[in-house]
Image (tube, rainbow, N blue to C red; front, side, top):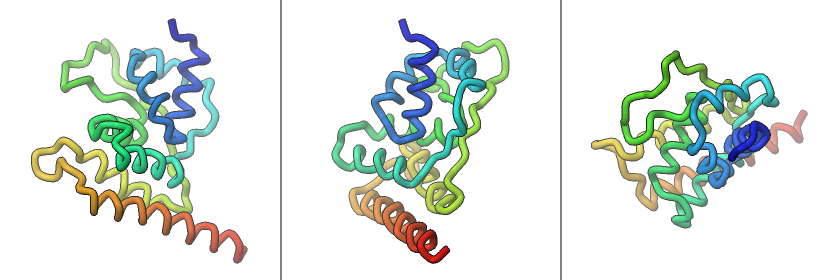
Length: 152
């Protein structure tokens, strides 16, 4: 049995790029995840978190489907319907608020958009070369942000 604290910790860790925590979160009903909204700190997605998931995908530690589901969760604030099944929720979904690091928001959006396309008929596969470019985008964004911080 998962406690509320376990769910809260899984949400926070998921936003920090912990795909093991996200796997645990996928086992929770949406109502349980939503119930943590008032107990959560501000959820800020960083390029470091995105980089962790990209590296796991590159090393084949996670499936493309899990990477897509993670991207969908951090973009929308809720877990999508599993395997396209009808929702079992009787009420509207109340997404968690997840903000993107403002220093790198554009890069985060670009990578998440691409990961969220995994499984689509047209752009559904991320090649090794494309994955390398996405990883480089995260590294470059971090380097630029660090430089900007030093100037201030």
